[in-house]
Length: 198
Image 1 (cartoon, rainbow, N blue to C red):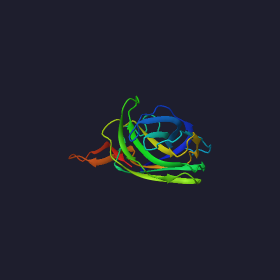
Image 2: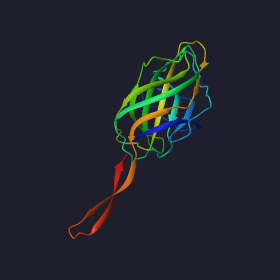
Image 3: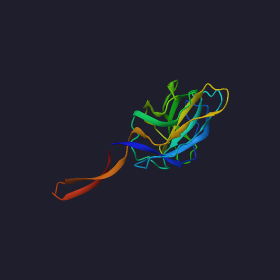
Image 4: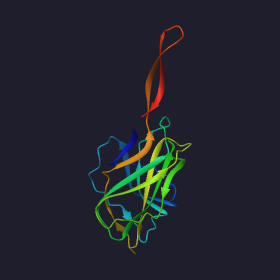
């Protein structure tokens, strides 16, 4: 089964400026983990005045170091990202999303997928979602970074209330070791361990 990450209340550090953004802020960075307990605490990231969410990333989710790691099958496919808005703001719009594979040293990354001009209004509470088609990265396969861009029409800095409680669906398959049993020409039972993706 593909990996499904869960957003948590736990903070994270170490992010890259990934496409489509020219600037990444650290207004909200949360850890996402497979099988984790979903977050319950609202975060209130500051969204800058007249912010262009297509060029400035404000909210990031990051998997643990080495997760899923180089042994996983970073397959191409759809990524579905969800956020729960628990305090709405009528001047804000979720406009962009970027997804990248990042190396262990956080010095390099490979873009997996992106979308701009989503136009998802944050004027109401509830779960908002976006699906992005992603490619299979050739390198930097240590952990995942997902960054969202929020646009603002306000002439002043403003905030939005987000509770990191949702699942993020990925096409990545985790590698596990399985045993293949077969007989050789002398009818001796042999066991060989091979990787399998589930």
